[in-house]
Image (cartoon, rainbow, N blue to C red; front, side, top):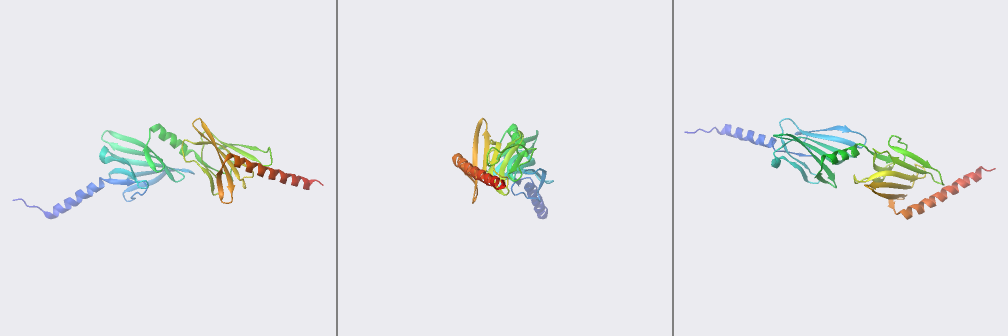
Length: 264
């Protein structure tokens, strides 16, 4: 005769279910459960931050996803691994690259990912560290504060009515954004584009014309911006120089008037 203790069976079932739940945890890097997942900013500077996620004691994470694009980055259910940690690297608050450290019976493995237009793609090690270097050395150029000698070489030309300011970022500097106070003029959207020169005309406080020079591989390009009543707008090269000639003539006329007033 077999006697079954119903009370013990219920407790056993609850324990098994609880352990299974702990062994099938999902880490959502956009919305982590902080009771189960530890999160900390482990590195940061003006624009860059490194956020580390790892399971709390007793938890086994079997899947990593990002709920913003609703995408799974890694699935340990099919590969047979367990998550060790995730490092997310952000630029100006936006997730750009990720490192996943996972544990398998034969040891630890690392996987690397890049976020392009809200889609995560696995990338090789050398690209990951190239992007990481760019992220760590990204800066914002503000027309109101152009004298950052550690980041740029500065040249000022007074060949005409308006002063021309030419800033060349140093080799290890990546311009992420050009702005005037709180108004964004240009922002880097592609890691393949490198800003190698910024030219603006007039006073730093009131400049209305900015020229951003980009390089992608061996190809170069120029972008032209004009400050209008509703803010900074991209314009064609011809329109840019027409406006520059107009403002330059106005500045020369103002200088001439001031000179005439000084003559007794």
